[in-house]
Length: 291
Ligand SMILES: NCCCN[C@H]1CC[C@H](NCCCN)CC1
Image 1 (tube, rainbow, N blue to C red):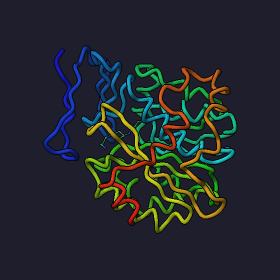
Image 2: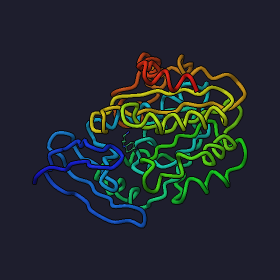
Image 3: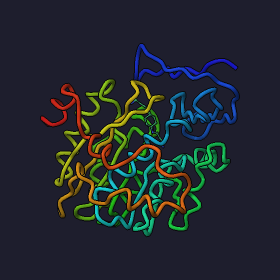
Image 4: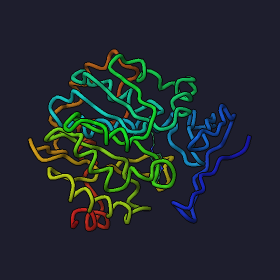
């Protein structure tokens, strides 16, 4: 009945709208407003504090890229930590990697986990995997408590810097990620849009270059229902065995064959788009590669 418009001070003067067929869930958690609605043309949509988190139609572009860009860049990911990602989409993607033996996920808002379990978003396949341990709590505290060198990969599937995820964009958090990663371990974080947030990205790149002594790269993908239609990721590795993010050594087709057991096959990610994701327009390249 009507339209949902995503209006936010984070993207002033513009708004993306989706035609609403039915509101499926509305709640207020300790951290944010949570809503799920059935849209006319993008399937079910998850909204937190008025910001679109994912839609059934295009979530593959975000979940597959944020997961396989890091995990296909190292030979044998075994222990993976997901910060955020309570909707379960990233878990579904991590579970495709048969080399992975244990997945910790730390989501601050239980209501987001409950909503995904309500099967409103049918992403529950990720939570059913026996390798998954769910921790409901603050990712900053979780990482501070993590023993040094615990993980091969950390995926920071956060919302935006206004609200509960604000600390996940700050230097102390990146330092705790670096400590929790093994030498040559990798982190992939949600890193905003080059059209909207070049200044946020610039600050993140400066911090990452100081903290991650392996390589620091920015990659991006297209998500029609995110403002400006694109979203980026910081891909960083700690000092140790060299990681070349631009030439994935853990090819997805090998993963592809393993994925018979996990839900639908990949809709977006492939080796070519992995490498292409690191190609940047000049206005972004100038800022990101100069730092
Ligand atoms: N597992 C899906 C979580 C989605 N993460 C974020 C949701 C909010 C979205 N705002 C877009 C801001 C414009 N760059 C960024 C990704």
